[in-house]
Length: 426
Ligand SMILES: *Cc1c(COP(=O)(O)O)cnc(C)c1O
Image: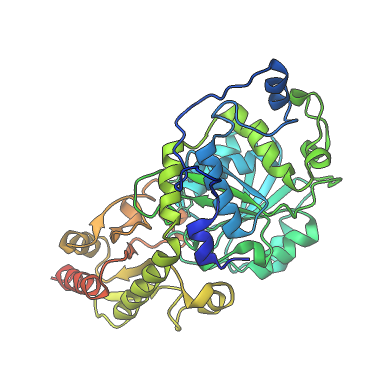
């Protein structure tokens, strides 16, 4: 068994004699077979192989193998974006009339999907605060509840998932725990080790790490029991679109992923582009070097903010005084807490605007988690569709500023933020 550092560099692709050292970028939508029988078996899911890029292709496959190995899963499914990964996962488990539970402090796009779009198709979400007790969560579960969803580190509310609590509930009721691990990455946290069943990434963020490629990934632990589980008839009844195969019976630990690819990806078509997968693989090759640097730079920024007179409050799970510090210590590797820091600026929206305009190194972008430092004011951008009441439910105040601390020099980063804070109060 290799260390995670080695896996970041080497996993997913292992060339044979005379083959290219670097995973090839295979830019072909279609694959050739000598006989119609072989092609037919692929369509029946009786044989593994590529035939049409909506269902899979070699470069995308290498990325799936790499991330599955990093997380300790049985496999993965790459999607066109993080949102596509979350949508396909929800639809793979739910049909009209079903519901699920999610912590309320989640990414704005996911919040919209859960509280606006999925309900239009009869799939509803019950939100709980991240610190909700086991009893409260249990009281929301009925026979139509299909999963519990949370983010390892909530974007941008910063709450750290209490895996022990959530997985105790999911195990008791026989439903999967789904974790969006985008902000932590497998270098900082591996949720399968703490009871998660499915992990989702927006690979657009740290996995790519260079702001070049949109992408999403679903990783499955392969450990959840679908077979005979009365909550999941779609895994236990014949799929007539594949001549009556039964996912839980015929595919064992691969049931979730085979169904996600064979039904959801086939019919909804949110496949990852090979070139994006190629760039994301290059990104992951250095993930184990970038995450410690993002984390140490962010910790330095958080410490500086804590003592700055222009700052009302700071949230960073790596700060010993932070409410999330105990969970950070319990679940994260080597004290790392990733690169995102949020704080409340004195002077509200007006000071927030002045602060952003005075920054030189941090640029205003709708993005986080790339090598370059960046800044965003959610109340006037990503979360502007939400009412003030909804903002509070998501754990966001109107003076919240989100910094995504990059991997530049710590001294330069601190200098830039300090200068801009001073300018914000004038
Ligand atoms: C960005 C993000 C997403 C959505 O990913 P896209 O690739 O932009 O679709 C989902 N979850 C989290 C935590 C994110 O930061």
